[in-house]
Image 1 (cartoon, rainbow, N blue to C red):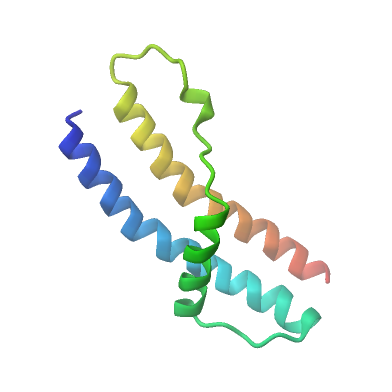
Image 2: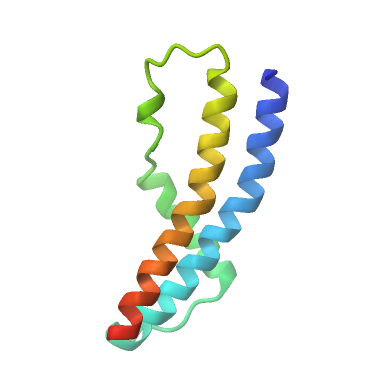
Length: 104
């Protein structure tokens, strides 16, 4: 896969996954922080800003399994892994949060 295609794909992925993560953050915030810490609810835009600020401090990569692999199409495989991870990870967190929310 060409580098240009990977850059375009990553950019499109960011425009999809960043708001998705903010949406999940706003739901989890309103489920847990509002009733227990008596904090105000937050909107999607506030959650988006909050998640962007936090991501600057807590930036981590979950692609360590790809380091050192000798694959001809390594960059394409890595790009698809990152996109899948960015879409599925917030969904898993939302599911776990929903289960916890039911039992509180």
